[in-house]
Each structure stands twice: as C-alpha cells, then as structure tokens.
Image (cartoon, rainbow, N blue to C red; front, side, top):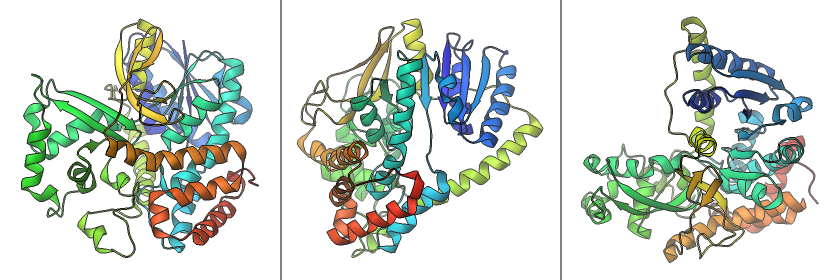
Amino acid sequence: MKITFMGAGSTVFSRNVIGDCMCSEALRDSVFALYDIDGVRLEESRTILESMRNTMGGHGKIECYLGVENRKDALRGANFVINAIQVGLYDPCTIIDFEVPKKYGLRQTIADTLGIGGIMRALRTIPVMDDFARDMEQVCPDAYFLNYTNPMAMLSGYMQRYTGVKTVGLCHSVQVCSESLLNEVGMQDKLEGRKELIAGINHMAWLLEIRDKDGNDLYPEIKARLESNNYKLDDKECGNKVRLEYIKNFGYYCTESSEHNAEYNMFYIKSNYPELIEKYNIPLDEYPRRCIRQIEGWKKEYAELLESGVKAHERSHEYASRIMEAIVTSKAYQIGGNVLNSDHLISNLPAEACVEVPCLVNGSGIHPCHVGALPVQCAAMNMTNINVQLLTIEAARTRKKEHIYQAAMLDPHTGSELDIDTIKKMVDDLIEAHGSYLPEYE
C-alpha cells in the first residue's frame, strides 16, 4: 500500500499523521511517499520520520519526492493522498493577507478560513490542488484525497464539484468540541460515554445534541451554568467567550475556537466598537504571531531531536489513519467529514455547499449520514459563510475578478466594516501584492 503526503515539509503535522499510520498494524508496512517543493523542509521530515520508523520497529518504507517535476511519481499508485500544503507560506502570503487589509482598517485574527484572508488563501491554493487532481486522475484514479488544508470548505468543495477525485475534508475541531465545552463549564464528570451530534460547515458546525452516557440531555445544565456566570464575560482570562455567547444568542455551541469565530460574522470585530476586543478577549493578528512562534519552536525542537533522538509516537486524535485503517480492514469508524451536500444531507443548506456531517467509514468507502434540517438560526449563520465560499470557488473556476469582489462584499466581517468601493480597492491591492501566487483574473 502507498500513502502519499503532499506538503510533507509540514514536519510536525506529517510526523503526527504518518506516526499514527506507523502505530497501526494495518498501515505500518506501507510505502510513505513524502512530497514537497522545499528541499530543506522535506529533508527535515525525512530525517524525523526515518528515525521514528526505526524506533517503532522499522516497518514500511519512506520515499521522498522534491519539486513539481516529481509530483506524478509521488502520486503514482497511491491508495491514499494526504494534503497539508500552504501555498505562499507565512512569508510572503500570510503577511500580505494581514497587512494589506490593515491599511484599510480591516483587522483579522486567523484569516485562513473566511474573511478576505480566507478568500485570498483559497484563490492561491485551488490552482495547485487542481493540478494535484489532474495528476491523480492519471496516476492514482482510485485514491482517496484526505484534505487538511484550509480554507477547508472552499478547497474541499472545489475538489468535490470540479474534479473526479474522491475527496473528504478533515479538521481537528469536531473531535474536541464537546469535551472543550464540558471542561469549560466544569462538567468533566459527564465526559465518559457522552453522545453527541455535530453538523453544519467546517469551523461552524453545531453541537446539536449532547447527552450523557444514560441519554440525558446536558444542554439545560450547561446553559444554566453559563447564565449563572454571565457566559464568562467577566472573566478576563477566558478565551472562549465568542463561542459561549453563541449558545446564548443562537442556542448551540460550535466546533471551532473563539479566535476563529470572532471573524466569521459581523458582531465582534468592529472599528466603531473597539471596546469589544477587550470584552471578548479577541486576539487580533493572532495567526502571524502563531506562525512566528511555530517557526522558531520547530527550529529548537528539530535541534533537540537531532541531539536526543526521536521517541516512539503515540497515536493522535487525527482522523486520517483511522479512515485508512477502516477502509483497509473493513472495520467501521465514524468521523466528522467535510463532504458535498449534493444528497441534501443538511436539508436547509444548498446542495453545492461543502458541509461537515457525521460519516461512516468502512471497507466500501466514506458514507456521509443524513442529518436533516438545522435549526433555522444555525442554518442562517452557516449561509453567511457559504455565500462567501461559493463565490470564491466561482472566482477560482471562472477567473473573473467580479466574483472575488462579490465574495469580499458578502463576507460578513468585511462587508460590515468597509464600503463597496473600498472593498474593491483592497481586493485589487491584494491581487497585485500576491503577484505570481495568483493566476490572472479578468
């Protein structure tokens, strides 16, 4: 079996996912094909993974493929392809995503999923992933494409609608959603055996049901505890206020963190209400800071690993190895997957939207589960994001600049802060600043 990792220079993440595979008896003898366009980072990943492989019994084989000219060979004959690329990296593209909008007074926190930053990230990533798809259709047409790259719904949605590749989008937030809420409200005794239903869109999927091991609804107690302490708005240390207030205003908790969700709507980052930033503990410019910390942290960690050696890996909560294992062994496993809504899995969201729903994985593949209608207010919140996602995909498909303008105009945060003419000027500046990282638009 062959497992290909696109963007293997993402060393920490490739170590987690491939390390997970090495923990699985069904996967550990695979050929692990590492692909990247950065030779230094690819070599770092090879060094770490070879050391880990030897530490864990020497199973399998690691192969490296550097550069676009070797991409088809990396993919050739693959059974599974894991995607974790970052087109344009932190420098220059993430810096551009933050600094150009800032000149127009538009502030962001993460900018990798929605907002003007998410739009630009999708537009520079979709052409690269489309190239991956064309290669896969030729050299591994039956492979599963497990996408971890953001913006998840835009990238996975494009692949699902406009390529023949079997694609599922995977995130980390579904697995930890209910646990984070129960920890937040001091109900850790309800963690074991809990039952939940999560559905919506990536980074804004809703915890629709949460029950204890005996089937009792936990939401009434959760809400009572939050109401009694004003949804932690008075707690200066709480970094989860946006999501907790979602429960107050929309009735349900959602999957992704508050620093993400603060920029997915028109409520919290507002230049005319600067006091909201402190009130809700919103970390503006968080992603650039995080990138710098991660870059410096990896340099230090890599040096330490070279000196002290790599320890055996403990399997993480990432879905990728569990999906591959379920398909290979025919032992069923449930995930929260990002899939096309073409079968009206969520009946009050569009068929062309990429939705996040429970999926059963077994020997015959990945099977999304029908959820039905979301609560109206939850579907409405999702639609404010889906509008932007669909228009961004349309822009990438048609190469028409007007669709980029429209996506930005309809983005909840951007549209609530800037007028239409300013939005268009900002988009033009972003396109110019990205240069060759974007294709030409009419």
